[in-house]
Amino acid sequence: MSVDPEFRLSVPPVVDAFDFARRGQVVGGAFSIHRLQRLLEGLAEQPIGEVIELSVAPALPGVVRYAIQGRVTKDDKSQLVLQVQANLVLECQRCLGPLILPIDRTTVFELVRRESDFSDDEPDEDDLDAPEQIVGSPKFDLCELLEDELILEVPYVPRHTQCPESAELDAQADEVASREEPPSPFAVLGQLKKGK
Image (cartoon, rainbow, N blue to C red; front, side):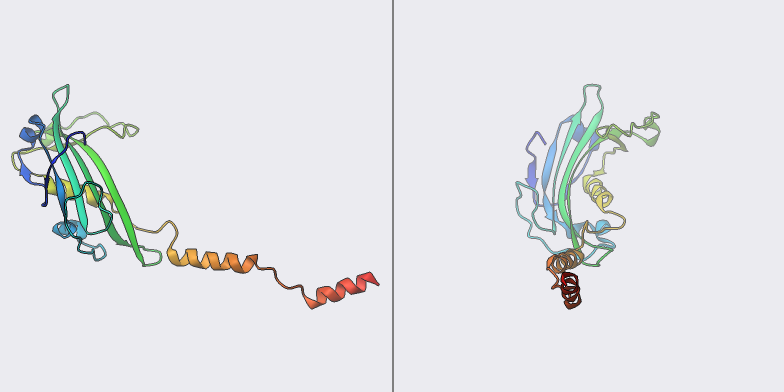
């Protein structure tokens, strides 16, 4: 974010989305991940993180840090820019051990008045910076928007790239393979026979 948000130790507020964008307002802060019940459904148990003023992304699970900025573009489109950072504890579906998923997501949303105002243009799949259109309202829940973004980051089947146990087994197998096996006594006898 280019503008420092007003920091708060709480979830994002409910705002008038279009007024928030028109005024270029910014809000940011941190809160316990346990405030996001929809996100926590089906996840492993999350630790309770100490909620303090964070100037950087949270290093440990249990805390969500966010910044949300409103703006109006040159072509008079109202937008919200949301940045959310967290570390989620998931269960690896391969080894069933804990897996930490770091999240640092920034998304731009374009506000429209009603669903019928959604653009008919097909979104360009290559344009990753194209804003997603959402319906704004006078009582727009920024926390719900933030929670939706975190939910989208959770993989359907979470898995380690390499599970800790399998990495340990691979290392042990490599160690065994690297040891020189003592020569077979029969091979030594074979050498002696050839020498005669």
